[in-house]
Picture 1 (cartoon, rainbow, N blue to C red):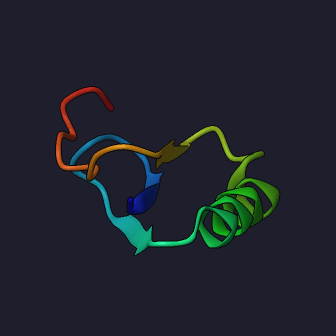
Picture 2: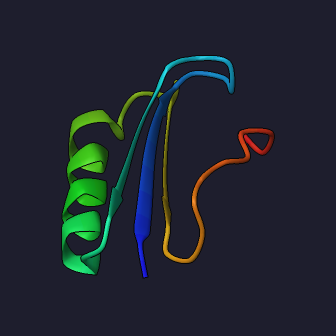
Length: 60
């Protein structure tokens, strides 16, 4: 099962970095790294999804 992580800088129309990994350990490490680097910024959203790709931006 693939694991998806997305880092977005601002509202839904702003740039995003998205990654997909087959390893839950790798996805979790990337997710925690994003939180450590960017989590204190008010304009950043970080999402990790364990079951489906992150295709819908409307909830951001």
